[in-house]
Structures are given as structure tokens and as C-alpha cells.
Amino acid sequence: MHRAAMRRRSNKRPSCETRMPSCGRLCYSEKMLERDDHAQRDRRDRTEVDANKHADETESAEAPINADFADSDAAQENNIRPSVEHVEYVIEAELADVSPNTTPQPALPPRGRRIVLPSVLFLLTCLSTFVAGACMWWPAPFLLPGQVFGDGQLDSPMRRVLQVNWNDGLVYMVCVLGILFTHEMGHFIATIRYKIPASLPFFLPLPIAPFGTMGAVIGMDGRRANRKEIFDIGIAGPLAGLVVAVPVLWIGINSMDMTGPAHGMFQVEPPLIAKWMLAARQPEGYVQGDMIWQSQLNPFLMAGWFGMIITGVNMMPVSQLDGGHVIYTLFGKRSRWIARGFIVLTIAAMVMNWVNRGVILMVILIMLIGIHHPPTSDDSVRLGPFRTVLGYASLSIPFLCFAPRLFDVF
Image (cartoon, one colour):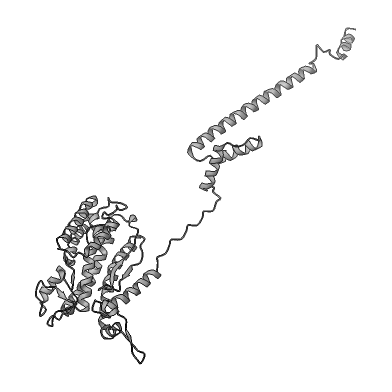
């Protein structure tokens, strides 16, 4: 009976007090879900904090391009306008073009040297020097208009003198242009050696002048050359020009004929190096210290004299002349006092009539350009003993090659 009662009691379903109520199971599930939600929120918060820290560190090292795009996208999703700072960063990043997938733009090719203008000026200088040599270095009287005769032929002074003296004009043209071309090629080759941008030589024709030309110039970007390079570029021209000018002058002195009467429209003063050659050669009829008349000149002598004068002028220790390059590389900023003293002494010599007053044109041109030499790209580069000795020796070139009185016109 007891067992039956126990069996009947076990078959009964437990009451709410003895079994786990359904509300308890629901409460337990909701607590677990809330706990999971809290854990996910914590992990999400920690992830966001780490991302913000990483973004701050990246922003201090480089432009925050990816973070800014992410902020901008997030702002667009939330219907919030991106901040002005983010827009500025994005624009700067686009301008900087730091994207790894961006193809770099090809660089513009370097501008080539001018060919046409130097070639035209060279041909015009050939013509002007040829005419000057054929006209015995005084072309003005031969520029008068000609006369037309009954048979229709034009007879002019220029035509007659070219027919007679064309060979003198040709020799003078070749000698003068050879000296000038060699001088400028010395500069040009030095610029090529040091990869300094430079132009081809620009020859300066002057048909109405007795010499037919004002020389030649070359343009270069001297700001890229250091102290040693600017020294080599500056000294290369005069030394190369003298290699041709000295033999031409010696040939001219050996060809002098001073036995005839001296006459002409002008006379030239030989520079010191020419006086030494005349003293060594002792041509017949020459009196030491005298100037040379127009009738006593020959194409070689005149071309050599002009080459010496051009070389002496270029080696003046002032401005951006060849001598200005050398004097700056030797003395640095102290060369300014040398340049100022040179200008003062030159003006004083013109006032005292010790120097041809035509030199005033050169002084005015130098003052317009600037009497001081600009600094090089690196003034600390050492010249070395050979260049230093050569530089000091080159300071004698103006005294050897330049004649103070130049010429007298009558």
C-alpha cells in the first residue's frame, strides 16, 4: 500500500513549487543576452578606442587620408556634413598625389639651345668683319651711295674697295673670328664639362665700327656652379683666346712694313706684349714707343691687336667679366673692394687723360650690370695650389694685353 501510494505520488506532475517555473527560464535567458550585449559593446568600445588611438598616431606621422575618407563616409551615412578640416586634408592629399596607384606625370623636356639666332649673328659678324678688313678698318667713307653710268653699271666706293682688298678682308675675318670663337669655346666646353646650362656663343656684329664687331658673349646659369667650377669657366676663355691671338699678333708684327710714309685716319697703341714683340723683332722703320698708323697695319696685326684688347677687357677684375670670376674665386667677398677700387681708378685715369675716354662706355655698361660678383653655389670649395697660382698669374693679363690709349682718331 505504501508502495502504491508512492507510485501514485510519483506519477503526479510536480507543482509550480517543485519544478523550475517557465518565467525563471525566461529571466535566465534575458540575463545571458544582456551579458552578451554588454560584452559585445565593451569589445566594440575597445576596438573604437584602439582605432582612434591608431588614427591619432598615424595623423601625427603622415596625412590622415584613409581616416578622413572614413569620417567623411560616416558623416554622409548619418546625414552630417564633413568638417572643413577633413575636406582640406582630402584636397591636400589629392594635390600631393600620394596614392600608390597614381601614375606619375612625365617631366617636361629641358629647353634646347638656340641655334638659329647664334647662327644668324655669326654670319652677320663674318660679313661685317670682312667689310671692315677690306676697307682698311675705316668703312665709313666707303658707305657713300654709288653712281650709275650710261651703260647701267653701278659704281660705288664699296664695290671698288671690295674688288681690290677682298683678300685682306678675308684674312682679317678669319683671324678675328678665330680668336673670338676659340675664346668662347673655352667657356662653352668648360660649362659642358661641369654640366652647367649655357648657350651657344652670340657674336655681335657692328658694321660701322672700325673693327667690324664688338666681340662675342655666352650666357650660362652661373648659380649652379661652385667656386672651382666658376674659376675654370672664367679662366678657360682668355687662355684659349690667347693661344690663337699671340701667334696671329706675332705673324702681323713680322709682316709689318714701316718704311713708307705713315698716314691714315687713326693710329693704334700696341699693348705691352706687342711692344715686347716689336722690341724683339725690330722691324725696319719702327721707333720704340710710337703708335702705329693706319697705313702701317696689316690684317694679321690688326686682328691680333683686337684680340689682345678684347682679352684684356674681359680680364678686368670687376662684375661678371672673366676677370670678375677669377677675382671672386680668389678673394671671395673681399673682391667687392677690388672692384670698387678699379672703377674709381678707371674714372680718375679718364679724367687725367691717361686712358682713352671711350672706355667710359664700358664703365657705364659694367655699372648697369653691377660691379659686384654674385656668390657661387658653394663658396667653400677649395681651388687647390695649381688653380690659385694660375689665378694670381692671370691678374697680369690686363696689364699685358690692354693698351690704355687704345687709338687716336684724326
